[in-house]
Length: 268
Image (cartoon, rainbow, N blue to C red; front, side, top):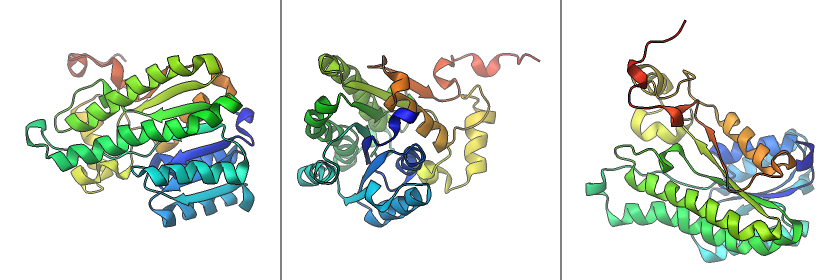
């Protein structure tokens, strides 16, 4: 991962969740970071952690921004270029989940999910692309296993992540002639606060539901956020220099599971 050293990296949603652990990992590898988040206190806290991980005060920039707003998207890119003079990596991490049956999904919920998970990524990327062409940089998008696996209550969220999957492939084709790679990571169920609305922070109940009662993850456990960050770092690094339009699953084999998996006898 030495190729990440000094690479100027924008992480949207850099103040929490996957954004935080990805920032810490990139800090370990010596990247220069731009953490965009509407929760500026969270972004600044992550920046302090990155400094403890080895970055100098001049290596981390925090930007208060709600990327569903055009001016805020522009502010992230403009401040990045003003400080560092270039952009090497864009990590489209920011996103939300809202859950309801499709037949009961209100328009404001649909708009909130699509605006952040799809529209904001598209237009954030448009602003970044001229700078990425100049550096022959790359983009990593955060999608999800539900981009292809239908789940009750997750219809709109799954639709948004399916859009990200098509966005990744199409953009990869369009950017190939410029040497700009575009890839995505598809996590399965990860042990984060994303599921608090369902389980109230009870990680034991979440673990049981997703591995024991409904064994969708053949490796028998949930992923950690750090394992998702590892996949992001790989795709952003020169180790993936001939990889574009691709998706890495960080789901313990969940995407391989068929309807009969739960009933299969386990080998000893």
